[in-house]
Every structure is written in structure tokens, then in C-alpha cells.
Length: 487
Ligand code: NAP
Image (cartoon, rainbow, N blue to C red; front, top):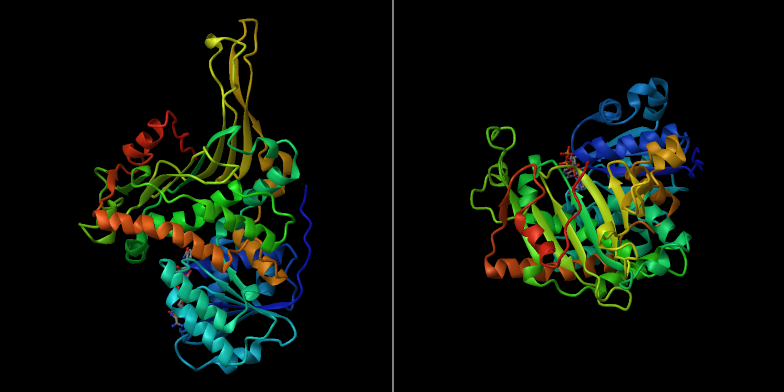
């Protein structure tokens, strides 16, 4: 099955921070892939902006390199050269006043202008203000804001207020790239497009839900940012919270941006405060014998007394009719055994086993894998084949996209491809609304404040493990266990 590509209208996309890591690794390769697919019209314009004195040719060279290194540029040289014709560069310091008239000259007045803020959050305000004062903030303008969106509730509120001075909420696209993943949208299709699951999607039938976002990488070069953030701010407040919302939300009346986001917001507002003994924080240690290649967290950030967590696991409760009594266990961490993002919906056991105790107890699990190998698997119980009596066996019913959808399933569009095209089309469904972000911080802030007040230090865990043992305890105390972290 080949997905239909519907070209978008001609647009101008300005990438502030066009020479940065995110632009080179994600944004530019994503644009080129959409260009290859025929979705981006020939006369669209992509304008890189940064302080460096690159000139148009210099920036085109950088784009060529980025698209070859991180995209499909090397595979289609002719298409790459055609794509580069659409690429421009303007030298602007976001905190200065020069260069804006050069940018205005490139932009075509009659089309969508998307301004992608791929720069440090401290520059979001100055950029919004300057776009406005230089007469570039018309009704056809959309701004795209990268994470982190604030550091806590107060800073997120301040940022929302600054952006709101210059742009309407309908023009602001706050990116959480997890929401752009094929499986995340499929989760909504599975839940709300089938009669099969929704009647079971509540505390009567679901024992608990596990959400795991595991990384194998350490903090790398992001140490100074990460020291101020930690896993709670960097991952839990945004990515895991968004996944929790999509899993737990009520069916929206229609699949439209505000209807979906209203339902997500209700989930966050129904979350109970997390109890201190329902959270485990961890910090990874060096790999023994390979300390220089794989240093521990504290060495990596150069702070031997750091109390920032690189891992967090917690038990959350949603106080509403659907979910009262069904815990949600969430965990995320760096330097874990495998890179894996998965949601496991763990159904309850049957009320009574007609096959007797020797057949064992079995539960259905719906696994929604976000990465790698996006797909959905339903684990069902069947009879073990053969004449050896009635023994039961759990088998996966694989709804993997590679099987069902052919090439498009094997290589689902990258999240950035989908999200950037949604910006151009003006569809905000997969972007966080300001009140959602604030509500998420409102839930996260007291947890972080509690750690600080109690002077808590994260538990060390071995690199390449599944995290601190206390996280297993968190489950075991409830008579449950985490599912494995598998690549
Ligand atoms: P980066 O590699 O440090 O790049 C920053 C970019 O901003 C460069 O192009 C830089 O070019 C430009 N810049 C810096 N100061 C500027 C100024 N005063 N005026 C105009 N341009 C300026 O950062 P990044 O990793 O790409 O991250 C960009 C944003 O995305 C950050 O908010 C980050 O938190 C977020 N983010 C990044 C990732 C990722 O994977 N990298 C993932 C999620 C979110 P010049 O120095 O030449 O001006």
C-alpha cells in the first residue's frame, strides 16, 4: 500500500537556527524527504537564519551535507540540487535589529509564512517581538516552537504570555515530536476507529498501563542543559505526559484540534498529585573498564555532586470515572539496556479459569511500539498446539505496519515530516496548546519541589541495565512487574 501524497500550497518556511544541530539532523532532512515525495511545491522557499556569515552558497552547502548525512540526499543527487534552489539564507542575530529587511524581501506576501524557532528558548521572546515589529506577523504567519517550553509553570506562563502578545493561539505550534509518530496517530485510530477496544478501555478491564521511553544514549554534549532539566522536565513533563493523555483521554466529539486537546487537558487536570513513595529517581553510572567512552552521569556533566536524575519511574492515578483504580506506571531513562518507547495496556485476568490452575493465568496485553519498529501487537491466549492436553500459550497478534502496509509501513514518515506539513496545512491537532503545557507543568512542579525540599539524591544504576532496583520494587509492591525493555 502506498500512501497518498497531497501537495501543500506554496509556502515560505524560515528556520531560525537553520545551521544548528536540530535543523541539520531533523528539520532539513525531513523537508527534503517531503520534497522527494512530491508534497512540497517547486516554488516553496526554505530560509535558514543564523548569526554566521555563511551566505546563500555556504548555507546551501551545509544543507547538501546535512541531507546526505541524515537523509536521502545521497540517493537522488538531481532532486537534491533542485531542492537546493529553494534554499535561501539570511544573517540575523535574534537579539539585534539587522537583517530583517533582507528576510522580508525573500518572503512572498500571498502565502503561508512559517517561522520555526529552532533556537534556545531565551530567544523565543525576542524573535516573536521582532517578527512583529518588522511587519512580518500577518494572519498567514505560523510560529513553530521547539521544546523545552518553559522550565516550570511560571516560566511557561511567561513564555505563553510573551507569544500571545504577538500571535494568536491558532498561530502557535508547540512541537512534541512524539505526537508526530505514525503509531501515536494509529493509537487514536485503533481506539476510536474500532468497536473492539473502546468498551474494554477502562478500569473494569484494564489492570494497569505501562509507558516506557528508554534511551541507550547518555547526556552527551547536552550536559549543561540537562543538569538544569533532568528526566522529569526533559521527558516526563512533555513526551510521556502526552502519551498518557492520548491513552487515557475520552473520545473527542470529532478529530479536530481543539476537541482533541480539550480531552487531553481533562486528563492532565484529573491526575492526582504523585506521592513521594510512588516515584523513583536514578542516575547512571560509568561502564566499568570503559569509563572514558561511557562515563557515568556525574562525570559526563562534570559535577561530582549532581543530584539531577537521568531516570525517573512513577505511579500515576487519574481520578475520573474511567480510570479510578487503574494505575499508570511511567518510566524513562538514559543509558538503559535498549532504545525502546512502548505503551503496554495490561488487561485483567479472566475472572475465573475454566482450565484449572495448571493451565496458568494469562492476561491480554496491547503493546503500542513507538520506536524502534513502530507497530501494535495484541497478545492473546490460545491453546498450545498438539495432543498434550489443554495447556495455554500467549501469542502475539502482530499489527506491525511493515506486514500490513508494505513499504510505507516499513518506513513511516518521520515525525518531523508530518508535523512540518501539518504546520503548513494549518492543522494543530498534533501540537500542544498553551493551557495543556501549563497544566503539565502544574502537575510536575510539586514533584520537583518535593525532591528539593527533602534533599533527595537519585539512586545509582548500572549503564545498560533497566534502571534502579527501586523501580522494580515500585511495581513489585503492587504485585506487578515491568515488561522487558527490548530493542
Ligand atoms: P544548536 O545546535 O546550538 O543550534 C543553535 C542555532 O541557533 C544555530 O543555528 C545558531 O547559529 C543559532 N543561533 C544561536 N544564537 C542565535 C541568535 N542570537 N540569533 C540567531 N540565531 C542564533 O541548537 P539545537 O540543538 O539545534 O537546538 C535548537 C532548539 O531546539 C533548542 O531550543 C533545543 O532545546 C531544541 N531541541 C533540540 C533538539 C536536538 O536534537 N538538537 C531536540 C529537541 C529540541 P549561530 O551561532 O551562527 O547564530
